[in-house]
Length: 208
Image 1 (cartoon, helix red, strand yellow):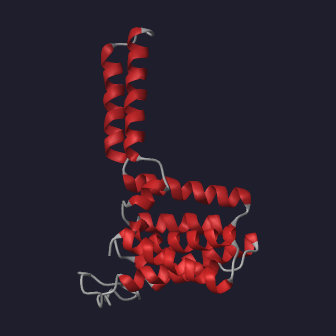
Image 2: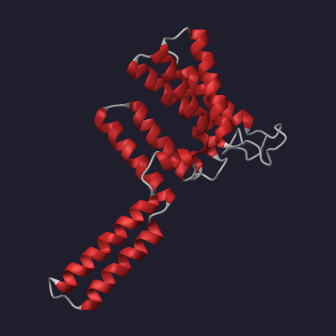
């Protein structure tokens, strides 16, 4: 199922939770936001819109390295009297490294490390958990561990830690409902799904 459809269901689920819980406007926005984010989170294992918005653009980073390499090469060649081949070598090296190592996956790993570092520094367990989740998603194949009970449990723990840290009830249930809606809508009983969900991954690879 497409991301927009997951988002629509997640937002609707969040709205229903907020309505039943009789939350005020600000709290309703938070609940809908959490449920919507949770409904998209399993697809962080792809280079989708959510993962691109959560990290730096690998294209921009590549362009920055290109400019840096060109500037360094120009400076040492024309202002420091180094041989031309050294400047050209530095430029080509930057170009190669940017193409070889600056990938969407690398940016997701970088984001994961940033979340982990910030979580440890700020003593926020939910942020540490989010870093672990993003790292797990970065190394997972599509519809792998994030589309399983393991992913659901980890994300639920992140939501529970967030809820406890900010003393805001409703976050956990919104996260569980939003995340579960994604997994349910990706199952094979939905006619247009060519693949199912590996609920018991990595123990079993069977798709439902």
